[in-house]
Length: 460
Image (cartoon, rainbow, N blue to C red):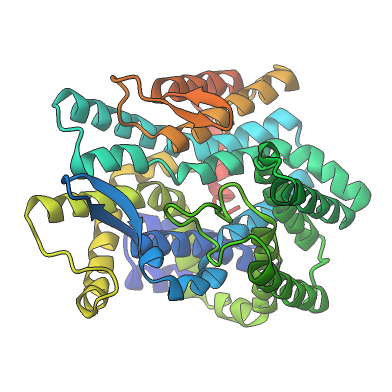
């Protein structure tokens, strides 16, 4: 009760009251650092997007997406620390291992995890599709609005790939139980083979395989952490060898300096992932584990832990809507003719604190509006077989990844994009998503008991 009273005086509000109640019931053996890494990695991604994303105006008045790091390439080594998506997938592996130890059936595991991601994603997609249709019907598909309706869905690649990790988690867990650390090693060898074919022999068609191999390997390291295999010696080896290999690949290989994609660059380390990104993931995970001790002491403080729990409850919503906040402010900036300092100039740097504060405020407003969709839930039990669940999660993965590729703009004009080899449109992607959700049984409401269980496990 002492934790709850401290929280109420400091934070206030129902969200933080619930967080305090969860904090008071936190088991002594819970790995709080994992929860911190989950919300911290998403926060770094959001901050990075806000700092890097720069709308650029062409001579004809068109607006295109730019990147501040492309204008200031000397800052690209910062991505060696700030490209933290590997940490999120690593943490996902740990959380999935915790759930899979309970022995759930494939469908039970996949449907519960998919619901947690797909409900807020579906709300985001529905709102943006409606907005894009209104923009197109009003004849305003130009400038910032045109850019927004096409680009705002790009971060959904993360949701799509994470859903794929959910789909593969049960069989990968069985492999882990049988072969342990040999599994991520084998996946790493696969990454090497794909890049050798791609860059050494010009077989570019194999490159998308690394979308699975790299993230599965990182996810598998989360399994290893759940088994207690990433002690200080192993973590130091991962950090040292990973960093050395990454620097060597950048210096002497075909890999760019940045660990995020740059506009117009012939090669991106992220899309699809490369061996350089895999070695970056190894070094970053090793570093993260080496910092575990000091972080654990910080997280033992009640107020800090309450904040982490509360932030975890809002993190997915903030991630989905943070670019919406960016485009809203850009639309205001362009519409009112407010000054836009050139990237890298002193005025641009001086304006960043205010810009970030405005973006945070706008995102907070969007989170308050849409946070109900991010409540933990679990669908009611179903008795259908695993083949239907596999088909359902596959369609959901394709639908979400397709939306990240095509966006929402140009729906009425029949605009399409290519997802690996599949031509996709916004309507097709939403159809795939709806069909997948129906097969998984996610269109019906969750049972009250399921909601209660998920509320207790909200930060898993």
